[in-house]
Length: 142
Image (cartoon, rainbow, N blue to C red; front, side):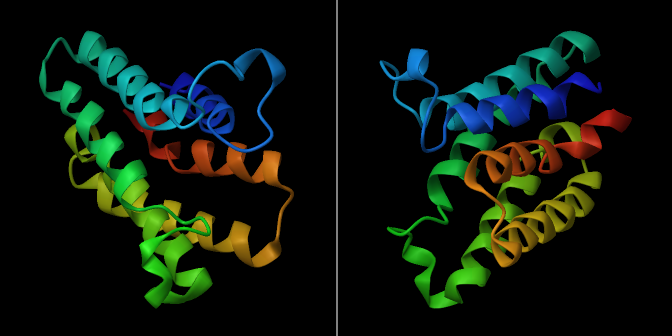
């Protein structure tokens, strides 16, 4: 499912700062915490003909809402780089209902990507595309 990382990258970007003008009427974070989970959950559920992948909807909502990495994050005790790594881990682990134990590898890849993006100070729109795409990259093997 090569399309999953691509669509996730766009949905993650749509939920970020400096939104595209036509997206302004919508809650910007809705694109991330609901859009990604709904897209991945429904797509994988149809492809696998199972209801189990629908559990990705609440797991992505929890991962994105409960583990923020912004200025108002409660994860400040982890440090600036630590909260990005933890948020990346949570984003990668949200794929567990679909990837199973491969989600652990996905979490490490995603955590490393979030950390690297923050360390290198990549420009914001590209950083959000990378976070969304790399954070779901193992869906290519599903």
